Length: 350
Image (cartoon, rainbow, N blue to C red; front, side):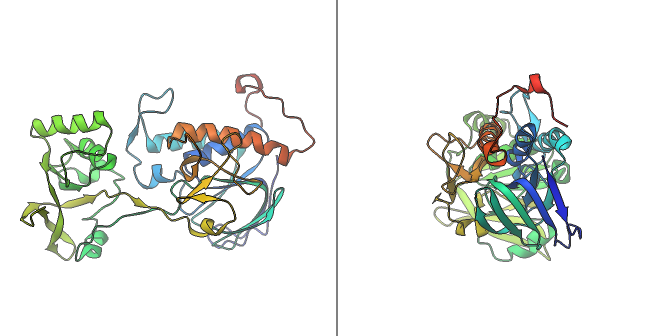
């Protein structure tokens, strides 16, 4: 395992030159676990992420949201999952280049050169793309005066702390998992919750939708259906009411302190879209037997990749990271035969 840093000037200023075995683009759950799997095979890693912290969407979008499909955890908050992954990779001490994105990737398998938006250069033998949804951002509703309310937090697209909404009159717009999950999560915390959707049926997990219906039947959550957002009312970024309209154009006002519009994320690959590997609907096409893209030496794991049978689950991203690491080993150690061993047998290398 090797990681060499030359000309260290600090992360904020950039201008570092790093030599590593594997460059991992994206520090979400799949990217973090890829560090562990590479480390177990004695390969060094550099993590690069456009966000200023590790965790990807788990940290940026829903740190307090519980996740129920992580093995051995009946329920774990997203922020706790990231903390556990950080603890797991700590023995391998990966270099982290955060708050910057990869701009270019040149070279070929065994000798790649990557540059970042802060001027750092990484030389790596292989690359793992674990960029999740890419450079993601919310789909904003077309409402007049929206930026002023965004600036004060009266309109929020992500909930980082449920307690920040305690005692608030909350209006949630959307019909997917995020809208349903946050309506349930804020029940009992917010002073009132109104859920706005254009149709009675929600595109959410059936059990969650059933819980929402039950909460509405108990009078804990008000369902505003079929309506859609029409206007915001207030002054100087202080929200007073959300105006909604039905399909016939009739309007009504809902008293509100905070609007949470959940209309999904816009996915932007950024410079990755110009790389030479094959893409399908903004996803990197990989061979699932190796998790390798159509560019030899560049691999992909997590939500950014696609292949027949792909499921966008964190646990599948974990498995993909293991497959990619084993496929990369012969690139980093071409003259060393890899004998598969269980972690319980070999422990964690130092």
